[in-house]
Image (cartoon, rainbow, N blue to C red; front, side, top):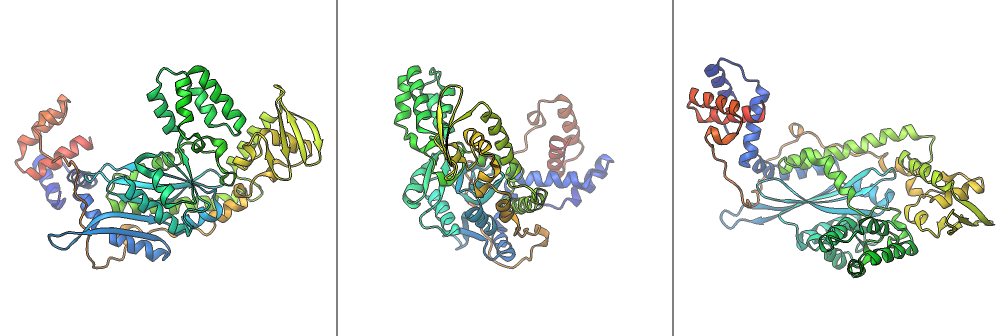
Amino acid sequence: PTISTIAPTHEIEATFDCKCPEWKVLCAANRAKQLLGIDHEDGYAMVNQFKQEMETIDRNNIVLVDTEILPSDGGERFKRMFVCYERASYAFKVHCRRLLAVDGWKMNNPYNNVMLVAAALDGNNGILPVAFCEVEIEDLDSWVYFLKNINNALRLESGTGLCILADGDNDVEYAVEEYLAHATYRQCCHRIFTEMVNKFPKAVVHHLFWAACRSTSALAFFKYMELICVQSKECHDWLEKSNWKRWALFCVPEWVKCTCITLTITEKLRNYCQPYLEMNIARKFEAIARLTSELFEQRRMVVWNWNREKVPPKVRDVINDRCIDGKRLSVVQDHGTLLKVTDSLSSSYDLNMEAMTCTCGLWQISGIPCPHACIGIHYINGNVEDYVDELLSVQNFLSTYAPGMMQLPKENAWKWHSGHNLHPPMTVALQPLTLQPPNDITSNKDLQHTLHHYYSTTDNLQVNVFLTLIVCCFP
């Protein structure tokens, strides 16, 4: 794969009397580099150049590269890299709800690296990437490094005013408690659910568990916990000891204004980034940076379609659903800004229209009027959209993305500087690439026959490698 593509192209044409498209040969060459890991080595050699380009487009962008000295030649080996976009971090701190979802993604490369990610939600429930960090392994030291740098990038005092949602793997919970002492830690409910199912596979409490998780008041939460106890006391006792205050929705601080209880934020972000995750490290971070700037531009433009609206479309959809749910309710007491609402089950809820609170808890947790509030607002001839939290307004959404984000130039437009290149990390359980006989390549008999014909026609090993990749990967 280190040879030029011209020679194999000419030899294929001379040997088989057919012209192989250049794009197919290039794809085969790139695939060969991926299989051998050579492409990833090139990526580490480009890391310092990527850092310079990021700082060129915005001097407040943060790219930190940690290395270790090689005792053999005094060179530098890559250890970890932290990247935080200044525009994204500012948008999160000033204009977004203060819930930051963090997770670790295993990378499919010869070094088995892990990418730590942090993302948030904007006022229209869009994913906002905030920071990325590539590390050798996901452990306490890596999480401390990642979270400390996020805290510094956001200019916070030990995580003040920050709510971290994580799955609890690899000491992330301990890292938050010890190094972001003023931050609020939230546990992903899916992780609790998985452990519960493994421990109590016969307990028929799945729907009750999720109902308890999503309960916005203590009264509703403990009602479902009692129902779980009826089905399985052992499961109930285990949930009681699981520090439920960290995963029950009604325990979320009201200033967070978010009802997320699982890591769907980072799962959606991974789907966005999936096409780039197998690239080498420099091209991967370049692609993610360009994706983030494109998100800023798309959302900056789309907001002009909402210039006559008070709330974004996703918020309006929630309001419409809650207004429909509110039709089964009725106002039974009116004391000015204090209302009492009841439903068909004779359950009553107290509203404070001035403080924008409801005893069900949903209004103050989500920032959007609950069904009880919707019927109360209609009762006083008000507009429901006027009672939505400011963080979820169109004006705030515009302020989030209006400044835009400078796009990172493509690699061929980088201003290359002479400098030291980084050595890649040590490979972990790297399987060597060997050319197998045709029968071992595939079980397809027609493909075996074709490859056997190709192998018997030319003895050039380089051409054989290209032909194998072209036939197998690009039929």
